[in-house]
Image 1 (spheres, rainbow, N blue to C red):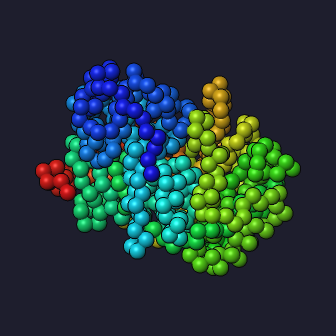
Image 2 (cartoon, one colour):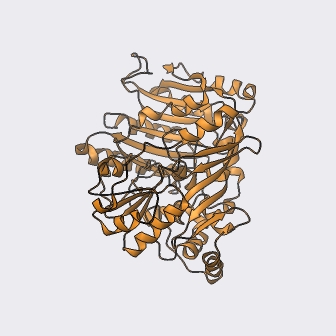
Image 3 (tube, rainbow, N blue to C red):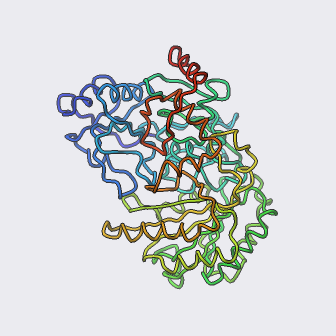
Length: 491
């Protein structure tokens, strides 16, 4: 599957010297500020970020991406890499940068016999779902189908199946990567294992990933989804009802709490629209659905519900169910932390924060973790924050720039109000522009940070890939020597 074809700008019509140089070297589309469609090409999902890159390169393969990396270095341009362009912090673009936009690398090849999908670096989860569902297989994707595979996988990857099969990064089998000097390598458990370790949770720090080989899992093409809204005043009862039974849940059931106000739109019934609620979302992700039916039924009966807008549906539809809540061009600021628990006082604090919430569709979400996530040793992948039972995400979502300060303040004060229950570490796919980002990144990676810094120094010593949740390179002679061998003789 590929994106809409863009007619290339003639080389002599490009204004930026790096764009002209790149157009002579790569097969894909090259765009600069004078090109038709520049404004559409530079837009990213979060409307808070109105950046003007110097050049946008749309490679058709890894060789094209390598040319873009080399040209950026030659012209002294900072790099940004766009997979799905969906990161809340707007990391897929920057002013004056050369953006490597992977949207034309959206191919998905499924080997149903080996249960492996080979996925282009610009694919979205919708692309993956469309290819895997006909085989009754599913990848460990997210909850919004428009999200890019690359960004979600490289920094973790939370989805419906997280407790059964782990994070997206736990299901990465191999990757094709363009390094900072333009060389192309393939990494897995045997080839460049340090790089492979780092890609599983370490973010976009190490290169341009142009292909992901993902493990697939059996899942019926139709699934049952609970999306049950309860009155906010029943929040303590609902939360306790879920958490007291977590130990008995099958791993294919991974609940998510959402606290907010119901939008005044379908699929929410008119009687519910505008009401404050706590919702419990879960999908029956068991390979054999009967194993999860009783648990899903219980989640729908924790109190007298306002509504249940879930039901039985194709898995690909379940993956699209939340897309409308996150339209492109909206304004988003999120902040995240791991929770040690969610007792009565913590729930009461969340309720107060919802009551203080500015009008609109902001939410406070709490993800139940454990299961397969927690069974992976902390040092086995770069993703380190596995022991916390819950993950908090405060989502400020709005539409008008004049409201920016008010919504950002609400999100930040909400996180601060919940400090007695969170660790300060968090999930790096969620935060927007962070206060003290270097400290937040260190806390997120915890005991894995120093190893990540050494791998970073080996594969990107000059920090060319720094438009991300950045790890500072730290030289380790042993790892550096290994990486030098990669540069001399790439796989």
